[in-house]
Length: 387
Image 1 (cartoon, one colour):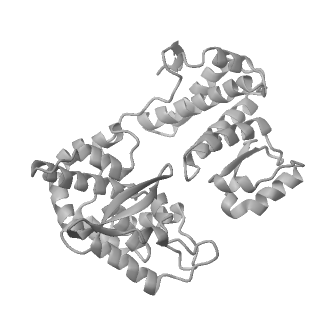
Image 2 (tube, one colour):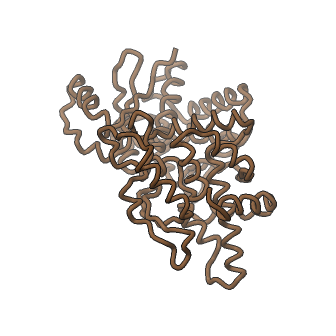
Image 3 (cartoon, helix red, strand yellow):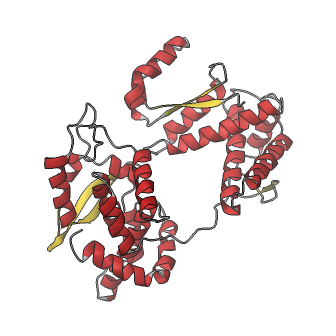
């Protein structure tokens, strides 16, 4: 049985619960400021005691992170749990571990991933992330004078000059140790036929949300957080009466303009004024609500999409809607550039996708060559007529 576990608290809805924990633990703090962060991760042992060093480490991460969802600190949290449980299993004290113990940890989780049949790229990214998190945790302990360890002293002495190799050893490099990027996989898109089936079979408001995903490229988190106030910013895109622009809060807290077909905006307004449930407290501003009037959660959206895809015999995931948007829009942008428009198709798509770097966008150039026939059908379905 694992000794350590991660408790995830959402301050926006569980503030009283968080205050109760602090009171029970005798921690004197004002937690109202926590409303500004998406999640708080607390590391606890089997008998409910807080592991303070790792909890403080995760607290610093969430404060520095730009994530609106808390996914970053969750990933760090689960990596820390893996490391602490490994130390418990090996009967090692956190203050005694060395670089060699970190290498053995790397070998253990690599072997575990291989035993479960994980593919090489997925296993590599998981292993490197967990090893890197453990190294950073101990380096942080020494740097902040929280706790000492041979591993922390070694990591602190070599901060910015070591890199993990594919064989699990470290070598000197000019940049800080970072996770190896797995080879990029070619994005997959949905055919027009599959899109029609999924949108037809999905219940409201998920059918409408799926339309938004595939015609705007917004992430599921951005769609779940879409507000009626943001819809008030919508306007026609110049003289084009079939497309509209919308200012929306994107990943990382950036306000960015995106585009959507005018018929989709009409469908959304109809939903708000006719079939949208009465909003519960705290969800009044959200566009998409559950049948009970609560804000939609990302996990629920993914579950409904999976159920619909299974029903129509598709292996697609919700993220494939975003891929479909990217490839079809890139085709439109390239056609406009060829017709004389002064635009850089790839840079424009980067903005529409909300990518921080152009490298994340370039993969869609390859996908466009592969899916040329499917793109033509998708273009006609998504933008050639009302959806």
